[in-house]
Structures are given as C-alpha cells and as structure tokens.
Image 1 (cartoon, rainbow, N blue to C red):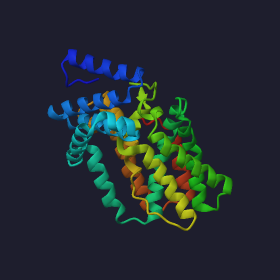
Image 2: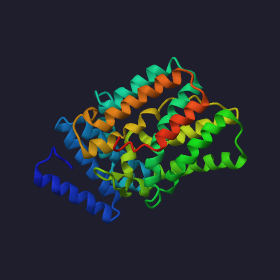
Image 3: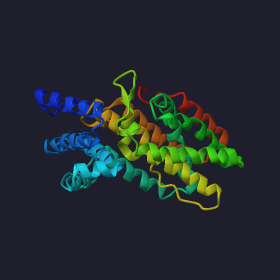
Image 4: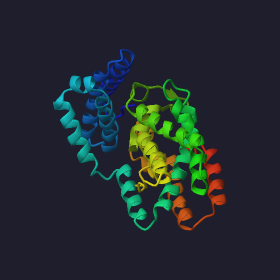
Length: 291
C-alpha cells in the first residue's frame, strides 16, 4: 500500500494501522496516519501526503479526547502541511478551481442540477456501503436523488421533506463517527473500497450540504450551491490509496472527468426534466469504480 517506504517500514506501518483499528486506539490511528502523510510529503509524494494527513485531521478532529491525546504539536504541523498541500498541483485542488470558474456563469438552479448528477452517480456506491455497520444512511441517497428531482418540479410532502432532513443529520453524524474513520470496506472489481475513502473532498459533508441547501430553497431561505459536490465522484482517496501516483492517469478518473464536463454542457443546454431524469437513471445503473 505504502510504496514510497522500504518493504520493512511499509509492513510496520500497515501493522500499526491494523493494530490501532483492532484496539480502537483512535489517537494511535491518527498519529500513524500523520506519520505516513509526513513521510510521504518529505519524499515528494504530494497526493499520498494529502490522503494520509487529511485522514489524520479527520480522526483527531472528531473527538475531543483523541484531539488532546494526539497533542497540539502534531495537530499544528498536520494542519500546516495540509495548508501547503492545498496549493499543490493536485487534481483535487485544480478541479475545484475549474468548477468554481464555470459556476460563475451559471444560475443557482443550474449548479444544483450539476451537483445532483454527481449525487446520482454516487448513489449506487452508497447503497453498497450502506451494508457496513453504522453506514445505513448511505443507502438513502437513491431516494434523495428522486426527491430532489421531484422538488424542482412540484411540492414534496412533509414526510418527504422530513426524510431528506433526517438524512442530512445522519450524514453529518456519520462524518464524525467511528463507523466512518475506523469503518469497514466493500469488495469491488479491483481493490476494496473503504468507507473512509469518502474522506477525500469531504464527500459526506458535500452530500449533506447539497441536500440541506435544497431544503432551504424549498422553505424560502435559499443558500447558493457552491458546487462542492460536483467533483466528489472522482473518489481521489480511493485511487490514491490503491493505485497511487498521478491519479489523472487512472481510467476511472479520466472517465469521471469526462462525465463532469459532459454534465456541465448538458445543464448549460437547458435540458427538459425528462432528459434530466433519463440521465439520472443511467447514472444510477453506473459503477463508477469500474466505468
């Protein structure tokens, strides 16, 4: 997994990660992720560094006792390193800038539909991950997609509104839970997908923010969509963890980039809701880990 280490060191770090997980030693888990990320950064592997330092940040930020056990020295250095990496020429940084530039010439409804199309592609993966302990909310993404489409065209019921609201709360809770940062994985055609692979691009919070924003629009308290969910289907953490190197060369990443820009042109063309629904149904049948 950690191909920038010598074989002996790699095994030691892998063993330490697994040992921390078995012992529910979350402070140790955060420290180990930090060490892996720091070593990767010093070795010049910026993608790998961002992956593991961001994981460390998520773990120690989730619980006060873990934060205190990790200590300010590591926390401060980890934050500083992440800040530096946010300026690096990583795909995850550059795609966000490109999307932000495109959204400047779009109205909020267009940006929301663009985001919705990404959510539709993530929903099959959510269904698979929902079988993991504590991750059941991810199985609700499919219905949420349908309800958002409906809400653009007609009033949804109070029950449907409350369903989306509950999903928002559960997604937020999951993002800070042990079921996420110390959770399980599901098999794929390639390497297993870890629920923690959704840490990249803060996917859970992106989903929660999109759904919450839609509810606010429905209640007359509009919140502009920032497009943060749009690139989440790239799943950078998964590909960085399992393939490494420049993930732009990963076929699935290339395919998702093509879908992102195809969606942009599609939304800008002023499609009918029937065309949007048809595109969504196609995405719901898509396996973005193999397509």
